[in-house]
Image (tube, rainbow, N blue to C red; front, side):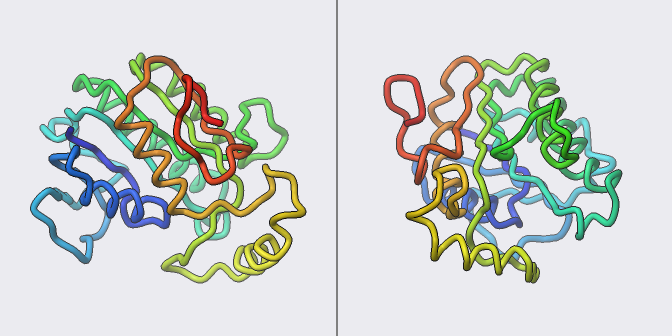
Length: 220
């Protein structure tokens, strides 16, 4: 299997990359990045690209599946327009270019409350991206919708870190959709969805605690 991974340097993406490189079913991982990755591997191709001007003619857009974990925060982006560019426009551009080259499967790291009708900008952007992806004709399309993602990030996020500590302590008492979701578990679920490539549109909900294996055509 040839995997195209967008967002390999991020929290969830770095876990997907590690799992994919260790998986014997995956023969090649292409991870277009803005800055060179600090690792090399016989199966890894990591071209440095400008996401505002992606190379449309690159042969590596043709893959068996795309896993997209691109994303930022409002604070890091600095404006709604910049946030939308990273969390909506970039994932959609990747999807369009991969689909144009015949790639049949796309797996997106979305958000628990994604909805194009949401009053909240973050959730609305995620929902609008999901709607746009559904129009591209992927044979298999999966949205992972975790809650707050747990794990060590490359950049400090004090407010998020405080929330993680609180949710970790209160985890068993909280509704499933409010609990902390380890990046490793989300990565495992996304890679499993890419490998399975189940026909149709699917959602891995936040309520699926620890993202167990797909059973009887549904995430439980």
